[in-house]
Length: 152
Image 1: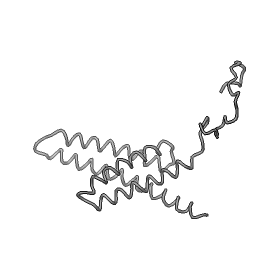
Image 2: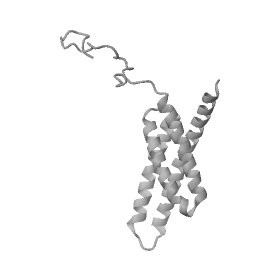
Image 3: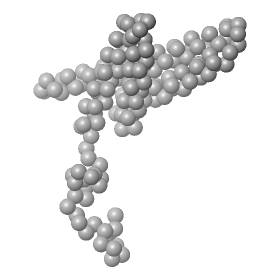
């Protein structure tokens, strides 16, 4: 086994754990917002809204973590998008809690690296614009004659 595969496998396993931890962290943030909303004396709807948004984000992040762990293709773009949001949160945290900001930014970088490795390893799709798809070189795939088997 070459070193690239060993590092890629290690990064992939770490990314699975990080995605799961991020989903749990978001669930915890939703619970804290819910507790603040419950016991806040001003009864503002902002805290309830923040709790609901964080809860929905946690459910989505959990679905992406499951999809990434089971190697579903839908999870790749979503995992990368979540990491962009986590990186933005890390920059925001950097001012008040630099350790948490650095940890969140590093975890986002690890997951983004793992996603990029998976995307680069995907096979080309049918009809790929690069000419490497299943119909590459087949100039008369649709001859328009109406004969069976001439139109895909």
